[in-house]
Structures are given as C-alpha cells and as structure tokens.
Length: 180
Image (cartoon, rainbow, N blue to C red; front, side, top):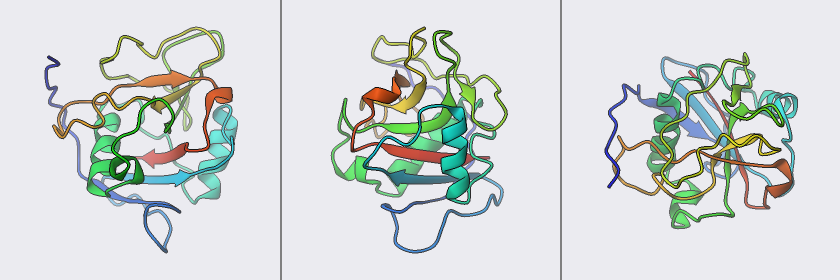
C-alpha cells in the first residue's frame, strides 16, 4: 500500500488545450497553476529547446516555471481529473498514452530532469512502479507513462513519474505546458 502524501497545492487555475476544451487559449497566470495540454500525432518535442518552442507557440512561454516544486505533479493530476481529460475518459491507459511535463533530462546524465523554463532541477514524487525516472540513457522526457497514481482518485496521492526516450513517443502523446 502506498501512503498518501499531503502537499500544499494551490488550486488549478484552468486547463485548456486543443483537444480538451473548445475555443480559447490557455489562461494567464492568475494566482495558481496555469496548465494547458495538447494532443499531438507526431513527435515534436525531443529536448528542452523544442519543448520551450512548443509551449511558446501555444502562448505559454513561462511553461516549466516552478515545475521543480513536487506539488506540480499533484496539480497536473488534479487538472486531468477536474477537466475530465481524454486520458481520464479513456480509463487511464498505460504504456502508450504519455503526457510530457515541461522538464527534460540531459542525455546520458540521468536525474533529475530540469525545468524547461530555467533549468532548475525538478523534484520527482516517489515512484510507484520501480522505475525511478532517473535512468542515465536517452530517456530524457518525463511525465505520465503508466497509470499508477494518476488513476487513483485520492487527489493527495502523487502520481507516478516516468521517463522515456523521444523515439518512444506515440501518436497518443500529450504535451503539458504548465507554470505557477
């Protein structure tokens, strides 16, 4: 059994993206987490520079700010639940539907992943499946890879951090641009 971890997480301001809500763009930072997700059919992000470019093109140039705060993981999980995100409505798929968070590891260096905003090291929540998200190979992207923790309705249980290589992105990938 995994213990619940209580982290002080402010409410999510909103979550908007091309495939989650119709119309409008991401919200401006108004005193909480600003979160946007976009489903993509092709590999777009391969490193920190391409992640920054993607988020900037969506009007979220501050993406990655405060991502080093472990509460960012709870904010993302809560946003997926509150917005009834397609990952939620699809039953929390595992292994193929990945949601990239705005942090990237340096190749062959390993953990920790660094914020795409200011290169600050991110603090990952405890791993629930045994892969600590700290491999020292080309698995530079990080976020939702398996449903562990993400699908748990306990909104105080941090989700499982996972890492993967850009070549392993699938057509069901989502990119998250989020900041505090």
